[in-house]
Amino acid sequence: MFFNLKKFLSFSLIEYMVLIFPFTILSGPLLSDIFISFFFLTLAFKLLFVKDSDISIYFRKFLNNKYFIIFFIFFIYININSYINFNWNVYYQKSFHTSLPYLRFIFASYLIAFIFIENRIALKIFLFILVFIIVFLVFDGIYQYIFKVNLFGMQKWDPNRITSIFDDEQIVGSYIIKTLPLSLIFFFNNKKYLDKKNLFLITIFLAFQGILIFLSGERTSFALFIIFMFLFLIIFQPILKFFLIGFFPVILLLILIISFNPTAKKRMIIDTYNQIFIHGKIAVFSEIHQSHYVTAIKMFKDKPLIGHGVKSFRKVCKNYEINKWSCTTHPHNYYIQFLAELGILGFLFLLYFYLFILYKFIKTLKIKNQSKKIIKLLIYSSFLLNLFPFMPTGNFFNNFNSILLYLPVIFLIYYNFNKKIFR
Image (tube, rainbow, N blue to C red; front, side):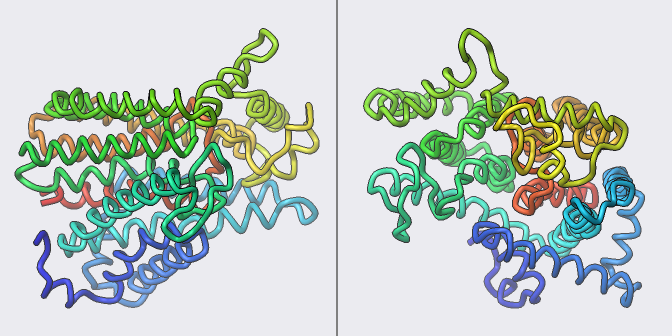
Protein backbone atom coordinates (compact mmCIF):
# COMPACT_ATOMS: atom_id res chain seq x y z
CA MET A 1 0.00 0.00 0.00
CA PHE A 2 1.33 3.46 -0.88
CA PHE A 3 0.37 4.90 2.54
CA ASN A 4 0.29 3.75 6.15
CA LEU A 5 -3.31 3.02 7.23
CA LYS A 6 -2.52 3.56 10.91
CA LYS A 7 -1.14 7.03 10.22
CA PHE A 8 -4.08 7.81 7.93
CA LEU A 9 -6.53 7.03 10.73
CA SER A 10 -4.61 9.40 13.01
CA PHE A 11 -4.97 12.41 10.67
CA SER A 12 -6.34 15.65 12.10
CA LEU A 13 -9.64 17.17 10.95
CA ILE A 14 -7.89 19.75 8.77
CA GLU A 15 -5.87 16.99 7.06
CA TYR A 16 -9.04 15.05 6.26
CA MET A 17 -10.61 18.23 4.89
CA VAL A 18 -7.63 18.77 2.60
CA LEU A 19 -8.13 15.26 1.20
CA ILE A 20 -11.87 15.82 0.74
CA PHE A 21 -11.26 19.18 -0.94
CA PRO A 22 -10.70 17.84 -4.54
CA PHE A 23 -14.13 16.15 -4.39
CA THR A 24 -15.81 19.43 -3.39
CA ILE A 25 -14.64 21.04 -6.64
CA LEU A 26 -16.77 18.54 -8.54
CA SER A 27 -19.88 19.55 -6.59
CA GLY A 28 -19.84 23.17 -7.76
CA PRO A 29 -18.53 26.49 -6.47
CA LEU A 30 -20.43 26.63 -3.15
CA LEU A 31 -18.95 23.70 -1.21
CA SER A 32 -15.43 24.16 -2.57
CA ASP A 33 -15.51 27.86 -1.66
CA ILE A 34 -16.66 26.97 1.87
CA PHE A 35 -13.59 24.74 2.20
CA ILE A 36 -11.32 27.47 0.81
CA SER A 37 -12.76 29.96 3.31
CA PHE A 38 -12.32 27.46 6.15
CA PHE A 39 -8.65 26.95 5.23
CA PHE A 40 -8.18 30.72 5.11
CA LEU A 41 -9.79 31.26 8.54
CA THR A 42 -7.79 28.38 10.04
CA LEU A 43 -4.50 29.88 8.90
CA ALA A 44 -5.56 33.39 9.96
CA PHE A 45 -6.42 32.06 13.44
CA LYS A 46 -3.04 30.31 13.71
CA LEU A 47 -1.17 33.45 12.68
CA LEU A 48 -3.07 35.69 15.09
CA PHE A 49 -3.33 33.50 18.17
CA VAL A 50 -0.71 30.73 17.88
CA LYS A 51 2.28 32.73 16.72
CA ASP A 52 4.91 30.22 17.82
CA SER A 53 3.43 27.33 15.87
CA ASP A 54 5.36 25.70 13.04
CA ILE A 55 2.89 26.99 10.49
CA SER A 56 3.36 30.58 11.70
CA ILE A 57 7.15 30.26 11.51
CA TYR A 58 6.97 28.83 8.00
CA PHE A 59 4.51 31.51 6.93
CA ARG A 60 6.83 34.33 8.02
CA LYS A 61 9.45 32.85 5.71
CA PHE A 62 6.85 32.57 2.99
CA LEU A 63 6.20 36.32 3.23
CA ASN A 64 9.66 36.90 1.70
CA ASN A 65 9.01 34.52 -1.18
CA LYS A 66 8.87 36.17 -4.61
CA TYR A 67 5.63 34.41 -5.52
CA PHE A 68 3.86 35.70 -2.42
CA ILE A 69 5.19 39.23 -3.01
CA ILE A 70 3.81 39.22 -6.58
CA PHE A 71 0.49 37.90 -5.38
CA PHE A 72 0.19 40.34 -2.47
CA ILE A 73 0.97 43.37 -4.64
CA PHE A 74 -1.67 42.12 -7.08
CA PHE A 75 -4.14 41.71 -4.21
CA ILE A 76 -3.51 45.28 -3.04
CA TYR A 77 -3.85 46.55 -6.60
CA ILE A 78 -7.24 44.96 -7.33
CA ASN A 79 -8.62 46.41 -4.09
CA ILE A 80 -7.29 49.89 -4.86
CA ASN A 81 -8.74 49.43 -8.32
CA SER A 82 -12.13 48.50 -6.84
CA TYR A 83 -12.00 51.59 -4.63
CA ILE A 84 -11.15 53.92 -7.52
CA ASN A 85 -13.91 52.39 -9.64
CA PHE A 86 -16.34 52.44 -6.71
CA ASN A 87 -19.88 53.19 -7.87
CA TRP A 88 -22.97 52.57 -5.76
CA ASN A 89 -25.24 52.35 -8.77
CA VAL A 90 -23.24 50.10 -11.08
CA TYR A 91 -21.02 47.24 -9.97
CA TYR A 92 -19.28 48.07 -6.68
CA GLN A 93 -20.59 44.88 -5.07
CA LYS A 94 -19.21 42.63 -7.79
CA SER A 95 -15.80 44.32 -7.57
CA PHE A 96 -15.36 44.53 -3.81
CA HIS A 97 -17.07 41.22 -3.11
CA THR A 98 -14.43 39.64 -5.33
CA SER A 99 -11.29 41.66 -4.56
CA LEU A 100 -11.53 41.84 -0.74
CA PRO A 101 -11.80 38.06 -0.07
CA TYR A 102 -9.36 37.21 -2.88
CA LEU A 103 -6.64 36.79 -0.25
CA ARG A 104 -8.25 33.51 0.78
CA PHE A 105 -6.89 31.67 -2.26
CA ILE A 106 -3.21 32.22 -1.46
CA PHE A 107 -3.77 31.59 2.27
CA ALA A 108 -5.62 28.34 1.53
CA SER A 109 -2.88 27.28 -0.92
CA TYR A 110 -0.24 27.90 1.73
CA LEU A 111 -2.14 25.97 4.40
CA ILE A 112 -2.55 22.91 2.14
CA ALA A 113 1.12 23.09 1.12
CA PHE A 114 2.11 23.22 4.80
CA ILE A 115 -0.02 20.13 5.51
CA PHE A 116 1.91 18.33 2.77
CA ILE A 117 5.26 19.48 4.18
CA GLU A 118 4.32 18.13 7.59
CA ASN A 119 2.65 14.98 6.29
CA ARG A 120 3.91 13.44 3.06
CA ILE A 121 1.34 10.67 3.30
CA ALA A 122 -1.36 13.31 2.92
CA LEU A 123 0.42 14.51 -0.23
CA LYS A 124 0.50 11.02 -1.72
CA ILE A 125 -3.18 10.46 -0.98
CA PHE A 126 -4.07 13.87 -2.42
CA LEU A 127 -2.27 13.03 -5.66
CA PHE A 128 -3.95 9.62 -5.77
CA ILE A 129 -7.34 11.33 -5.34
CA LEU A 130 -6.62 13.62 -8.32
CA VAL A 131 -5.84 10.55 -10.43
CA PHE A 132 -8.89 8.69 -9.11
CA ILE A 133 -11.23 11.59 -9.96
CA ILE A 134 -9.90 11.84 -13.50
CA VAL A 135 -10.18 8.07 -14.04
CA PHE A 136 -13.75 8.18 -12.74
CA LEU A 137 -14.67 11.11 -15.01
CA VAL A 138 -13.22 9.27 -18.00
CA PHE A 139 -15.20 6.10 -17.22
CA ASP A 140 -18.38 8.05 -16.40
CA GLY A 141 -18.05 10.26 -19.48
CA ILE A 142 -17.50 7.38 -21.89
CA TYR A 143 -20.44 5.56 -20.30
CA GLN A 144 -22.58 8.67 -20.87
CA TYR A 145 -21.43 8.85 -24.50
CA ILE A 146 -22.44 5.24 -25.16
CA PHE A 147 -25.67 5.02 -23.14
CA LYS A 148 -26.78 8.69 -23.29
CA VAL A 149 -26.86 8.88 -19.47
CA ASN A 150 -24.01 8.76 -16.97
CA LEU A 151 -23.68 6.41 -13.99
CA PHE A 152 -25.97 8.65 -11.94
CA GLY A 153 -28.64 8.87 -14.62
CA MET A 154 -27.72 12.37 -15.81
CA GLN A 155 -28.64 12.78 -19.47
CA LYS A 156 -26.65 14.62 -22.11
CA TRP A 157 -27.93 18.16 -22.50
CA ASP A 158 -26.34 18.48 -25.91
CA PRO A 159 -26.13 15.52 -28.33
CA ASN A 160 -22.73 16.79 -29.48
CA ARG A 161 -21.17 16.85 -26.02
CA ILE A 162 -20.79 14.89 -22.78
CA THR A 163 -20.67 16.50 -19.35
CA SER A 164 -20.34 13.54 -16.95
CA ILE A 165 -21.28 14.50 -13.37
CA PHE A 166 -21.24 18.23 -14.17
CA ASP A 167 -24.78 17.83 -15.53
CA ASP A 168 -25.65 20.91 -17.65
CA GLU A 169 -22.25 22.59 -17.18
CA GLN A 170 -19.92 21.84 -20.07
CA ILE A 171 -16.69 21.88 -18.06
CA VAL A 172 -15.56 18.27 -17.73
CA GLY A 173 -12.83 18.78 -20.37
CA SER A 174 -11.74 22.02 -18.72
CA TYR A 175 -11.50 20.32 -15.32
CA ILE A 176 -9.40 17.49 -16.71
CA ILE A 177 -6.92 19.63 -18.65
CA LYS A 178 -6.44 21.95 -15.65
CA THR A 179 -5.67 19.09 -13.28
CA LEU A 180 -3.86 16.81 -15.75
CA PRO A 181 -0.23 17.98 -15.20
CA LEU A 182 -0.61 17.85 -11.40
CA SER A 183 -2.24 14.42 -11.46
CA LEU A 184 0.75 13.07 -13.40
CA ILE A 185 2.99 13.91 -10.43
CA PHE A 186 1.48 10.82 -8.79
CA PHE A 187 3.27 8.59 -11.32
CA PHE A 188 6.63 10.29 -10.72
CA ASN A 189 6.40 10.33 -6.94
CA ASN A 190 8.41 7.13 -6.59
CA LYS A 191 11.84 5.81 -7.46
CA LYS A 192 10.49 3.38 -10.07
CA TYR A 193 8.98 6.00 -12.35
CA LEU A 194 10.98 4.59 -15.29
CA ASP A 195 9.53 1.12 -14.79
CA LYS A 196 7.81 -0.16 -17.95
CA LYS A 197 4.60 -0.82 -16.05
CA ASN A 198 4.56 2.80 -14.86
CA LEU A 199 5.24 4.09 -18.38
CA PHE A 200 2.40 1.96 -19.73
CA LEU A 201 -0.01 3.30 -17.06
CA ILE A 202 0.95 6.89 -17.89
CA THR A 203 0.31 6.28 -21.59
CA ILE A 204 -3.11 4.70 -20.97
CA PHE A 205 -3.97 7.47 -18.49
CA LEU A 206 -3.19 10.18 -21.04
CA ALA A 207 -4.83 8.36 -23.94
CA PHE A 208 -8.21 8.03 -22.26
CA GLN A 209 -8.12 11.64 -21.14
CA GLY A 210 -7.60 12.69 -24.74
CA ILE A 211 -10.61 10.61 -25.80
CA LEU A 212 -12.85 12.07 -23.09
CA ILE A 213 -11.84 15.67 -23.78
CA PHE A 214 -12.59 15.11 -27.46
CA LEU A 215 -15.99 13.60 -26.66
CA SER A 216 -16.77 16.53 -24.35
CA GLY A 217 -16.76 18.77 -27.42
CA GLU A 218 -14.66 21.36 -25.58
CA ARG A 219 -12.44 22.50 -28.41
CA THR A 220 -10.27 24.78 -26.29
CA SER A 221 -9.58 21.97 -23.80
CA PHE A 222 -8.73 19.56 -26.62
CA ALA A 223 -6.35 22.10 -28.20
CA LEU A 224 -4.67 22.58 -24.80
CA PHE A 225 -4.42 18.79 -24.44
CA ILE A 226 -2.54 18.59 -27.74
CA ILE A 227 -0.22 21.40 -26.60
CA PHE A 228 0.39 19.59 -23.32
CA MET A 229 1.24 16.35 -25.10
CA PHE A 230 4.01 18.18 -26.98
CA LEU A 231 5.24 19.68 -23.70
CA PHE A 232 5.12 16.29 -22.00
CA LEU A 233 7.19 14.66 -24.72
CA ILE A 234 9.79 17.39 -24.11
CA ILE A 235 9.54 16.93 -20.34
CA PHE A 236 9.70 13.14 -20.35
CA GLN A 237 11.33 11.68 -23.43
CA PRO A 238 11.38 8.02 -22.19
CA ILE A 239 7.60 7.94 -22.78
CA LEU A 240 8.06 8.52 -26.52
CA LYS A 241 8.16 4.82 -27.49
CA PHE A 242 5.09 4.01 -25.41
CA PHE A 243 3.38 7.16 -26.68
CA LEU A 244 3.82 6.15 -30.33
CA ILE A 245 2.48 2.65 -29.62
CA GLY A 246 -0.28 3.64 -27.19
CA PHE A 247 -1.65 6.67 -29.03
CA PHE A 248 -1.93 5.03 -32.44
CA PRO A 249 -5.18 3.21 -31.55
CA VAL A 250 -6.45 6.43 -29.90
CA ILE A 251 -5.89 8.42 -33.09
CA LEU A 252 -7.55 5.63 -35.07
CA LEU A 253 -10.51 5.66 -32.66
CA LEU A 254 -10.92 9.43 -32.98
CA ILE A 255 -10.89 9.11 -36.77
CA LEU A 256 -13.61 6.45 -36.53
CA ILE A 257 -15.69 8.66 -34.21
CA ILE A 258 -15.43 11.55 -36.64
CA SER A 259 -16.27 9.29 -39.58
CA PHE A 260 -19.30 7.56 -38.04
CA ASN A 261 -20.57 10.23 -35.65
CA PRO A 262 -21.76 13.26 -37.64
CA THR A 263 -22.51 15.29 -34.49
CA ALA A 264 -18.91 14.96 -33.25
CA LYS A 265 -17.57 15.82 -36.69
CA LYS A 266 -19.86 18.85 -36.89
CA ARG A 267 -18.87 20.15 -33.45
CA MET A 268 -15.12 19.61 -33.60
CA ILE A 269 -14.37 20.23 -37.29
CA ILE A 270 -17.19 21.75 -39.35
CA ASP A 271 -18.39 24.25 -36.72
CA THR A 272 -14.82 25.23 -35.88
CA TYR A 273 -14.04 25.96 -39.53
CA ASN A 274 -17.31 27.83 -40.12
CA GLN A 275 -16.88 29.97 -37.01
CA ILE A 276 -13.34 31.02 -37.91
CA PHE A 277 -13.91 31.57 -41.64
CA ILE A 278 -17.00 33.75 -42.07
CA HIS A 279 -17.93 35.18 -45.49
CA GLY A 280 -14.36 35.14 -46.69
CA LYS A 281 -13.04 36.77 -43.51
CA ILE A 282 -11.17 35.29 -40.55
CA ALA A 283 -12.69 35.74 -37.08
CA VAL A 284 -10.81 35.32 -33.80
CA PHE A 285 -12.15 31.88 -32.77
CA SER A 286 -15.69 32.91 -33.74
CA GLU A 287 -17.75 35.99 -34.53
CA ILE A 288 -19.15 35.86 -30.98
CA HIS A 289 -15.72 35.67 -29.34
CA GLN A 290 -14.44 38.44 -31.58
CA SER A 291 -17.36 40.64 -30.56
CA HIS A 292 -16.48 40.12 -26.89
CA TYR A 293 -12.83 40.97 -27.57
CA VAL A 294 -13.57 44.11 -29.60
CA THR A 295 -15.96 45.35 -26.92
CA ALA A 296 -13.38 44.69 -24.19
CA ILE A 297 -10.66 46.50 -26.15
CA LYS A 298 -12.97 49.51 -26.55
CA MET A 299 -13.46 49.49 -22.78
CA PHE A 300 -9.68 49.33 -22.34
CA LYS A 301 -9.08 52.27 -24.66
CA ASP A 302 -11.51 54.37 -22.61
CA LYS A 303 -9.69 53.65 -19.31
CA PRO A 304 -6.31 52.22 -20.34
CA LEU A 305 -4.40 52.60 -17.08
CA ILE A 306 -6.66 50.96 -14.47
CA GLY A 307 -9.66 49.65 -16.43
CA HIS A 308 -13.25 49.62 -15.23
CA GLY A 309 -12.94 47.38 -12.14
CA VAL A 310 -13.06 43.70 -11.22
CA LYS A 311 -16.06 41.88 -12.78
CA SER A 312 -17.19 45.10 -14.44
CA PHE A 313 -17.43 43.75 -17.98
CA ARG A 314 -20.93 42.34 -17.48
CA LYS A 315 -22.26 45.82 -16.68
CA VAL A 316 -20.04 48.25 -18.55
CA CYS A 317 -20.07 46.35 -21.86
CA LYS A 318 -23.54 47.79 -22.53
CA ASN A 319 -21.93 51.18 -23.05
CA TYR A 320 -19.62 49.80 -25.76
CA GLU A 321 -21.87 47.43 -27.70
CA ILE A 322 -20.98 46.81 -31.32
CA ASN A 323 -23.57 44.07 -31.95
CA LYS A 324 -25.90 41.66 -30.18
CA TRP A 325 -22.97 39.48 -29.03
CA SER A 326 -20.95 42.23 -27.35
CA CYS A 327 -22.21 41.69 -23.83
CA THR A 328 -21.76 38.67 -21.61
CA THR A 329 -20.42 38.05 -18.10
CA HIS A 330 -16.76 38.22 -19.17
CA PRO A 331 -14.71 38.64 -22.39
CA HIS A 332 -13.67 34.94 -22.56
CA ASN A 333 -9.93 35.61 -22.44
CA TYR A 334 -7.96 36.28 -19.26
CA TYR A 335 -5.58 38.80 -20.82
CA ILE A 336 -8.28 40.79 -22.58
CA GLN A 337 -10.36 40.66 -19.40
CA PHE A 338 -7.45 42.15 -17.46
CA LEU A 339 -7.07 44.95 -20.02
CA ALA A 340 -10.76 45.84 -19.84
CA GLU A 341 -11.27 45.45 -16.08
CA LEU A 342 -7.82 46.13 -14.57
CA GLY A 343 -6.12 48.19 -17.28
CA ILE A 344 -2.51 47.95 -18.38
CA LEU A 345 -1.32 47.83 -14.76
CA GLY A 346 -3.33 44.69 -14.03
CA PHE A 347 -2.44 43.19 -17.40
CA LEU A 348 1.28 43.55 -16.62
CA PHE A 349 0.88 41.44 -13.46
CA LEU A 350 -0.56 38.56 -15.45
CA LEU A 351 1.88 38.90 -18.35
CA TYR A 352 4.90 39.14 -16.03
CA PHE A 353 3.86 36.04 -14.09
CA TYR A 354 3.29 34.02 -17.28
CA LEU A 355 6.63 35.02 -18.79
CA PHE A 356 8.35 34.33 -15.48
CA ILE A 357 6.87 30.80 -15.34
CA LEU A 358 7.86 30.27 -18.99
CA TYR A 359 11.41 31.34 -18.11
CA LYS A 360 11.45 28.92 -15.15
CA PHE A 361 10.16 26.12 -17.39
CA ILE A 362 12.95 26.64 -19.94
CA LYS A 363 15.58 26.99 -17.21
CA THR A 364 14.40 23.79 -15.48
CA LEU A 365 14.92 21.78 -18.68
CA LYS A 366 18.66 22.01 -17.95
CA ILE A 367 18.43 20.29 -14.53
CA LYS A 368 20.14 16.90 -14.51
CA ASN A 369 18.13 15.31 -11.68
CA GLN A 370 15.39 13.73 -13.80
CA SER A 371 12.76 13.08 -11.12
CA LYS A 372 13.08 16.56 -9.66
CA LYS A 373 13.08 18.12 -13.12
CA ILE A 374 9.97 16.31 -14.33
CA ILE A 375 7.90 17.24 -11.28
CA LYS A 376 8.91 20.89 -11.47
CA LEU A 377 8.14 20.99 -15.20
CA LEU A 378 4.72 19.47 -14.60
CA ILE A 379 3.95 22.22 -12.07
CA TYR A 380 5.08 24.92 -14.50
CA SER A 381 3.15 23.23 -17.32
CA SER A 382 -0.02 23.52 -15.27
CA PHE A 383 0.42 27.30 -15.12
CA LEU A 384 1.35 27.53 -18.80
CA LEU A 385 -1.82 25.67 -19.82
CA ASN A 386 -4.19 27.38 -17.39
CA LEU A 387 -2.98 30.86 -18.36
CA PHE A 388 -2.31 30.21 -22.05
CA PRO A 389 -2.87 33.60 -23.75
CA PHE A 390 -4.18 32.50 -27.15
CA MET A 391 -7.29 30.52 -26.25
CA PRO A 392 -10.81 31.36 -25.06
CA THR A 393 -11.11 31.12 -21.27
CA GLY A 394 -13.63 31.44 -18.50
CA ASN A 395 -13.86 34.30 -16.03
CA PHE A 396 -10.55 34.74 -14.19
CA PHE A 397 -12.37 35.67 -10.97
CA ASN A 398 -14.94 32.88 -11.14
CA ASN A 399 -14.64 30.68 -8.03
CA PHE A 400 -14.37 27.41 -9.99
CA ASN A 401 -11.64 28.81 -12.25
CA SER A 402 -9.83 30.48 -9.34
CA ILE A 403 -9.66 27.25 -7.35
CA LEU A 404 -8.27 25.33 -10.33
CA LEU A 405 -5.82 28.16 -11.07
CA TYR A 406 -4.50 27.98 -7.51
CA LEU A 407 -4.09 24.19 -7.36
CA PRO A 408 -0.59 24.37 -8.90
CA VAL A 409 0.23 27.19 -6.45
CA ILE A 410 -0.04 24.59 -3.66
CA PHE A 411 2.70 22.51 -5.26
CA LEU A 412 4.77 25.57 -6.12
CA ILE A 413 4.79 26.56 -2.45
CA TYR A 414 5.49 22.99 -1.39
CA TYR A 415 8.54 22.80 -3.65
CA ASN A 416 9.96 26.12 -2.41
CA PHE A 417 9.82 24.97 1.20
CA ASN A 418 10.70 21.33 0.71
CA LYS A 419 13.82 20.72 -1.33
CA LYS A 420 13.38 16.94 -1.02
CA ILE A 421 10.64 17.31 -3.54
CA PHE A 422 7.78 14.83 -3.20
CA ARG A 423 9.88 12.24 -1.44
